[in-house]
Image (cartoon, rainbow, N blue to C red; front, side, top):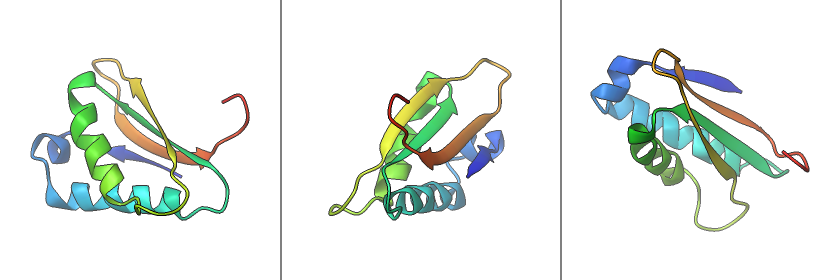
Amino acid sequence: MKFDIPADALGARDPQLTTVLAKAGALAAAQKQPTVIRVTALGQDFKYINQAIWRGVPQQGLKPTLENLTSGANQTYSVSIQPLHAGS
């Protein structure tokens, strides 16, 4: 699964975006196999995005891996959830 993060929602720290990011964390944590969440954004926005994602991950159970990938200035921010494969 992959979705883009609208720049205006991110800039406004939109509560709906925060909810969607938390649901992405919950979805990744609910998988039966190890999962990786890849966030593509500029460095200054990782803290907000990562905190919102971790809010959705239960304290108990399988924790997804979170990878931050720095985007280019004109690149769309995105979040993807994928199975974690050996060597990835």
